[in-house]
Image (cartoon, rainbow, N blue to C red; front, side, top):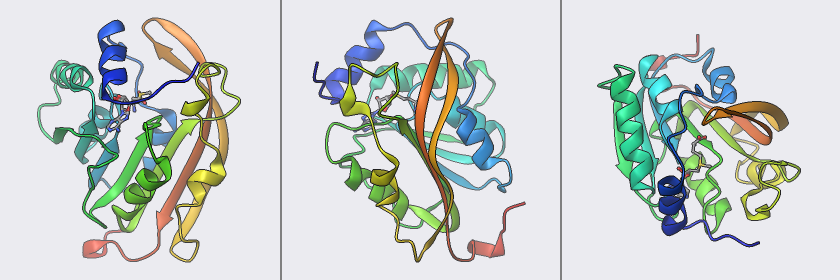
Length: 211
Ligand SMILES: C[S@@+](CC[C@H](N)C(=O)[O-])C[C@H]1O[C@@H](n2cnc3c(N)ncnc32)[C@H](O)[C@@H]1O
C-alpha cells in the first residue's frame, strides 16, 4: 500500500489514535544531548511533544514544529501536565515549505518525520539551521523496520541522510542503524532505525562549548 504523508494523513492519523501516553523522549536524543550545553533547539515534526518537553525541562529553548493540529494540541496538554509552561514555541507548519533561519539553532533534531515530498530538501534545510558548533540529529525508519514494513515510503537509508552534509563542514558522530523498543499507547513496539548525528564545525556563539 502506498501512503501520501501530507497534512490530511497526519490529521487523520492523530484523530484515529489515542494519545501516545508517557513513553519518554527518544533515546537517540538523550544520547546526543548528554554532553551538550542547553541552548536553542529545533524539533522538526515534534508530534505529541515528548522530545520538545524533555528538552525544555532540561534548559533548552525549543522551537517545536508539526503539521498536525491535534498533535500540537496534545503536545501543549502534555507540556502543561508535566509542568513545562515555558521554553517551547509550538509552531503549526509544513516543513516541506517552512524554512528555519540558517545557523539559528544549537541543536536540530527530527525523529521519523518522513515528509510527503523531497525529504532530501527538508534534511538539507534542517542541516542549514544548525549553528556553528551545533548538533544535528536525524532519526528515521530503517528499510528493514518491521513496524513500518507496509509503508516503505517512510523508510530512509543512511546514505540519503549523510548526503545532505558537506563532509568538510561536519564531524559525523553517528551514522548507521540502531534498534530500540518504543512504548506507545501501552504497547511495546520494536523499531529499527536509521540514525545520523553530526556536529557542525565552528565555534559556537559566545564561545560556548559542549560540556
Ligand atoms: C511518525 S510521527 C513522529 C513524531 C515524533 N517526532 C516522535 O518521534 O514521536 C511524524 C510526525 O511528523 C509530522 N510531520 C510529517 N510531515 C510533516 C511536515 N511536512 N511538516 C511538519 N510536520 C510533519 C507528523 O504530523 C507527525 O507528528
